[in-house]
Length: 109
Length: 117
Image (cartoon, rainbow over all chains, first blue to last red):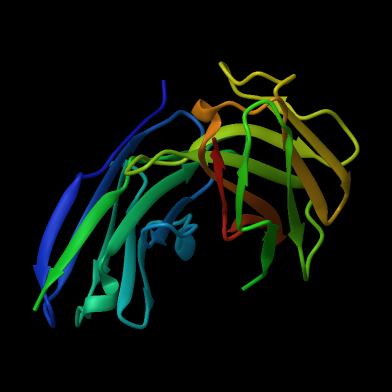
């Protein structure tokens, strides 16, 4: 079957680094996505990984290991505006996104 | 990135009435659009997949006669909530799929907050 899991909530300090992990199980895989969602708003695209390795985009990086069914989103130099939910999703063999429940990230000054 | 618009952003309607929500891809053509529903502090729940020129594919448990989806063109999909009831109050989000260099990316509309009184 299909399964995707990420922590419910994380807390970090402004200026620090935080890593949000995501594990998944699926027979068909067409890439892994990370989205950011602020309360009351729609998700916005952050990153996409289809091959193993690290993709860096400014303060945000995303890593994928397909053999381990594992991804993480790394946020550096945290800012208060990074307080949001971070959604992990993989695209299955039907090109449909299967969503994690989201990780609520709380940034403290 | 590509832009998806959604209209209206907020709507309040009376129980028993119908509400139509529009989703448009502004700078790309989307063969496939998706409709999601999100309850407070919950993840996105896929309601249906909308394909241009054909019938929508509904997820299990979603009433197709209640949530009418029409994908009339490559840039427009509509969701009509018929005979709305208070339990239909929710945040409805559409997304459109774009193919970029051999892979698919999904862009989300800003969402529509529906309140049924």
